[in-house]
Length: 311
Image 1 (cartoon, helix red, strand yellow):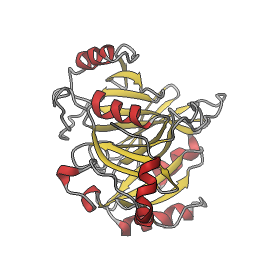
Image 2: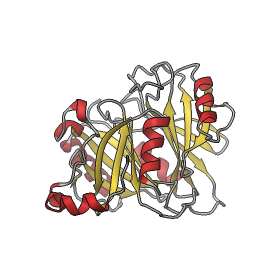
Image 3: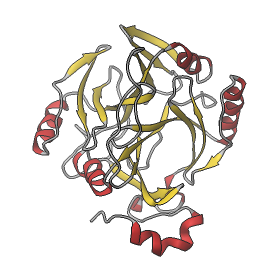
Image 4: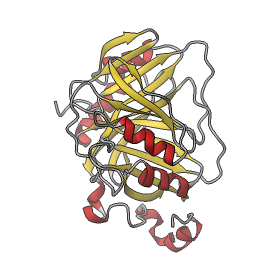
């Protein structure tokens, strides 16, 4: 199984206010800030990583909080919805919490036999809390206000909205090892049996809908998980053989990655488990220190002056 795609590694989205983003995901949703660093291409902008205690692949939601960027538009050619796995009977807790923080949410509904509750983050990012049909044994990160009986366990799924399902489905099934599990109208559910959690990709087919626009409140890309560099490069050959343009291996400090745009327009990444988030700070200090890519360390003082305060 280890030489397969192991479900989702992380999802990266865009926000317009760093402090608001940090407060919402740590204080309202109760996720751990696993890493506080900067954008590799724009060191005056944070790159936040939120997840479980260790930043386990399959739990990591990351953000580029570009201060003051305008709102994006969710639409065709992007990942449009993030599905988080939560414990059974936790919706009442979350509904009360959303009311407390004036967060709009929808009444629970059902999809593919699973209950879900939808809401939007402060930038408008679409998120579903989902009670999985299969037991999710992952250990949640707990806070004083969000305990294990309600806490988010990690990703359940991600939804892509596309004009046509076929070419993307071929990449999912023919290259990445997913299979079509079921279809309900224009929603197609793909799943991998290589891992038990964060294993689902849904595709909604909307041939007449407008394209999305990447800015605040939208997803920038989704990353699939592989065990190590060797498997990463094996997949590079498979993807290139399909005629898709794919980057060389890139060192992202906490994982190695490749990027390619799948035929429907969504930016896909493949990312390794190694070396992980404890590479440069101990487990008990994850997310508490500003960690900079080595090329920016000489400019730390200047960068720290530019970055917004989170206090």
